[in-house]
Image 1 (cartoon, rainbow, N blue to C red):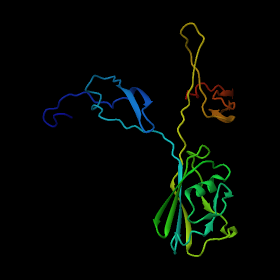
Image 2 (image 1 turned 135 degrees about the horizontal axis):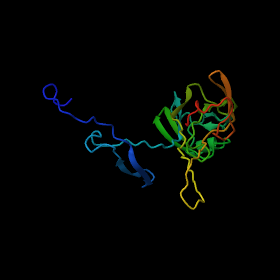
Image 3 (image 1 turned 45 degrees about the vertical axis):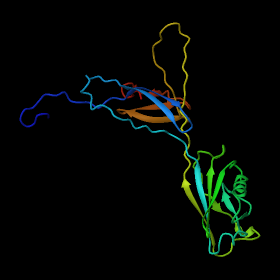
Image 4 (image 1 turned 90 degrees about the vertical axis):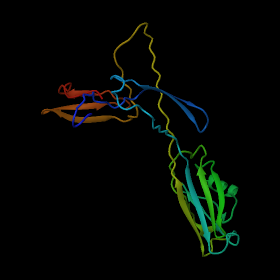
Length: 246
């Protein structure tokens, strides 16, 4: 306590500041948002509701596209190995034969031809004379913001110029896809001419029928919820003293 140990001074215990009173978000650009908010409403006098707030931590739920890399290494130079061919497998299908040093357009088209993929983006970089990297971003409408399986190597034996010994292909996951956050929006309206009272319930996410047998003391009772509802019907003993809202 203040003044310890010689002259103790009385002091009202501080409390943790409450949540902000209101907040609104507005887009500034594709990379920036503006956040406006109101200070917390305190139920204690100024000075005893904790130290003044100096900063807030804001988390933004943003989706991410799946990104994978195809690494081709060779004991001879990539230029010397360019006529070798391979196949990729994805979502249960295989691409056609792909040349080792193919263009980004040809690589993208080979993968896009797989059913369910749609548009993707491909970049290409030479890490050295013996190592080539294709970076694949699944950003098309069909595959964006999804956690996708890793690309595999197809049956290269069916290619005319299958891979020589000394050429290896490895697939790496660089970034797992993350679904975008889409908040649910509910609109409520009334035709009442004056103020209304009472209560209502919203059911979110519950799909199936639910039944449970419970006991109040030694007496059994059945709880029943219809599909898509969160209203609980009971049969048997009176459960009003055992059920609580929420």
